[in-house]
Length: 331
Ligand code: TXA
Ligand code: MG
Image 1: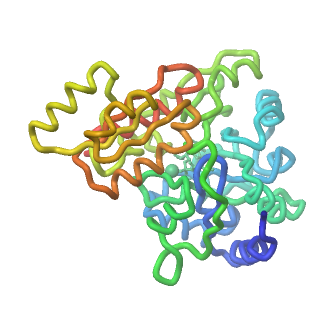
Image 2: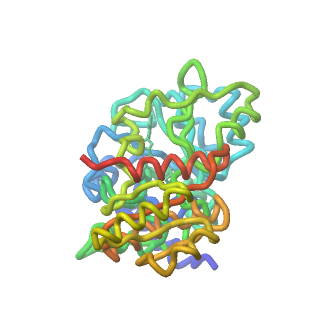
């Protein structure tokens, strides 16, 4: 149940320019009043995030969009009607309300309406009928794995006075578990900048036209697209079921340990020789738990993390994208 006292406390913190960690269906966010420059600067400081990386403005619903943008294209109307509240972020040409300190000086703004009931209620209260929004990146230090539980936020950023956040709202583990799909609607053609639970196929079928995929992938403007951005501390390797036995033997010969994330049947076979085994029975199950498992495997301190991935389908594109990034070498 949503605790009204907690929500009121969160509102007070936000109105006073503080930072609140909020649960969303994707990952936990670090929220501040999107129109308060000092509060937003606090987000960048807490995360240690470069100030030219723009933030997503979280809104109570589609009615709030108009204040933040130049105009609302037909595609945006159709998509928000279908997928909001939910894990879809849209990028549109900004209005003067979206200031440089939110957009990283770009002429566009990213907007999202999360579906988590607690945060949806918080946003509705914060909106005050004026379309006010909360800027919220994922609530992790820059370069670390996004938090999918309140405990991840507490472990990483911590609560004041010792830590960096004024208040953490525990809304349970995130259901989707990976960050929202980001769709850029500010250019000539709709373009996915970040894969997520809402697939390009779903988007294309709603707007009745094809969707391009991010050439923006190498752009530092979308920090989630930096290659090794979602990587755990320990090397992660994507391995096929066929190659797994060989890989395990090689490690064993070097007296090295490994952890495993794999479909149930494979996980059961390798459990006796792995330091820690996590199994999934669907793409949704893997997506919901992936970051928690990475956090745990990092804590255990093994030499290698093997992941046997699901097949590539429209539904698995988001989680496969994060796995690929997690397996990219850190510089
Ligand atoms: O699921 C999510 O989207 C979560 C939850 C908390 O809502 N938020 C999240 O925020 O993942 P963040 O800041 O960690 O990732 C948002 C990405 C960033 O990489 C940022 O660079 C990009 O969105 N972004 C924001 N505004 C943009 C804009 N105007 N143009 C291009 N990219 C933008
Ligand atoms: Mg992030």
